[in-house]
Image (cartoon, rainbow, N blue to C red; front, top):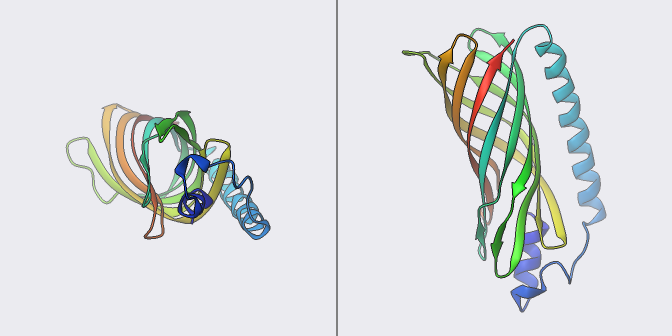
Length: 196
C-alpha cells in the first residue's frame, strides 16, 4: 500500500497530508531498494540484448491514481527499450517520469517514476495492426504535496502497435502498475516505436 493512502486514512483533516508524516518506514525503504536493483539489472540485460537489434520508443502516459479518498490523473513520459527473443515474444524495460501533476483538495499529486521490466507477447499481425499483452514487475513512486511513497507490484497491460512505415509504428496501451484492492495506479499511453 502506498503510504500516501495510509496518511489519508489516518488524517482527521485531509489538508494534513504531507505534514504529519514525512518519510518511509525503514523496511519499506530496504524493500524498494532491492526491487530497484533487481529491475535495474533486468533493464541493463534488456539493453545489452537490444544493442544487437531491437526497438525503442517513447509515449505520453495519462496515469490514474485512485483510492478510497482521492481520484487523480497526473501525466508523464514513458520510455521503453526492448528486444525480440522469439518471433512473438520480447523482453522490454520501461522508465516513466512525471510531467504534469493533478490537484485535489488543494494538494498536488505527481507521478515521480515507474520503473519496470516486462515480457511482451504479440500473437498476431493483421493489416499492419499488432495487438499484444505485457506482464512483468514494476516499482512506482507517487508524491502528494511534500510526501512521497513507492510500492512494487505485478504489472500487466494490453495494447496495439500500428505500422506507420517500415520500422516505425504508433502505439496505444492500457496498463496496471499497482493494485492492492484498496488503491490502484493505472495508465493509458500513446506513443511511437522505432526498430533498429
